Length: 348
Image (cartoon, rainbow, N blue to C red; front, top):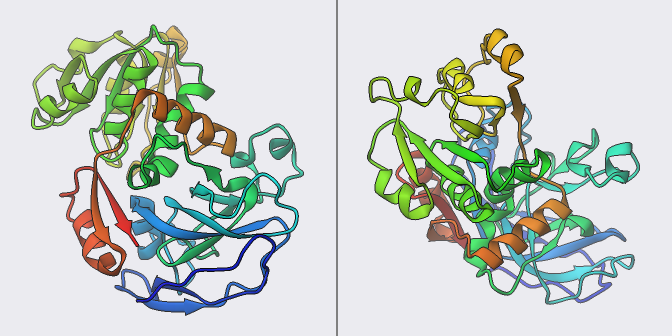
């Protein structure tokens, strides 16, 4: 599919965007052309060079969350260059390399937006919810949500950082994880392998937790100083009262009480993966030792910018597999097969 460029700074003339879209739940992606309309005064258009494939994209394709609207253009781990900007955009230039993550807008007026937390805005706009994402030639976003990419991070690695990277890094800042903390990462996959690197670079002593020992050697290379296999008899019980911070990246149901019991007094279990079922956690283990269970998610533009700067300085890199944009269905099938190690990136 021939992708086209766009105009220059202040050029608000709409040109069709070529993309790939799902037209019904669980369908294949098909070529799709749409007119994005005139560029808004605070919007930018970004020519896509790379875009990651996240499990959230698959959930939206399949309508797992019952919020999908079709035709649906996925893609919220976007990296590209600014090709057009509205007249109120002053902080970005045409040709500048930027990333766009899960969020592409907010109201800008509520208490959360005004306090620098637009990710909590009730009127936030998501890049692939009622909005066409980055699996195509270009994507539109409010300018505040186009984040400059540091020169030290190649574009193919920057994409997964825009969602997966900020998902595991933002809780470290928001919950004030100390560099002296004993930390653990549950699940060594698309999120977990980045969490290991971030926590190691943060200064923490990090333990990787997975079902078997198959990923142990890789986890240790990524920064883990210890490894627990949950299928080993007594492995979790033997780690009682050990960790200050546990981040769970898994989407499966696990023994949540066992993980709570692994926390030291005042410790936190942070859940960033979406379990299949609601959590059932006993209250006494929380009350007696002042333990906490919290959620974590992608951060604000400021959070993402800090994450990218940290990743650039400490050489945190996702492990990726690249596919041409035209092979999007093969790339999606590869991720669905659970064979990806660990993030899939489309390249225009």
